[in-house]
Length: 248
Image (tube, rainbow, N blue to C red):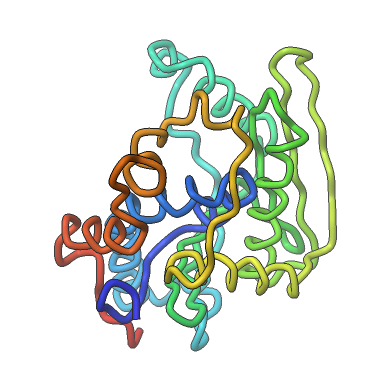
């Protein structure tokens, strides 16, 4: 049981954040639970209303047919966005110019997971990231892409990293590792349930972290609330949309 409920809603990108920082992944998971629960409800209704869009429907996963990738923001719309959003959007367009994207709703034990890879083909999935730290971000991207390949039942995945300082692209292709995917899901579930202590994060990562205040209040302050209390508080704050029918 999580927060007194049956299941916890999250996304592949949140799970992969463990490879950057366990605590940040946990905080993001609590913050985004409502969003993913709402998305899950939409996917379940889509399955019922538009069954022709469903490619795979089993006990643990619903995979929708790929559709042409649409990049929703024009160059003019991107002008007011941060450099990182612009680079990411432009990079994805280069990485997947004529490729497709797809969605999947995947169940694993008490987790309900949303998956939307940056690109997908007949036998692969892809993940693209902009980063000044490819050594560290690469681990996040590989976890994310491997989970996508596992969920979408593809034999291999491709990761592309763009380094904005050198303006170089780094690409790697690997076969899917189902055992690693299961291990990552188990680790994330243990963190969310409070059954595993999060690993200490490297101090330099904390300096500019956008979850620094929350981290301090949960784990490091004069009177830390603790993870379980914070998680349950965020669940209650999210309201009834966080948890929907877990039997689907």
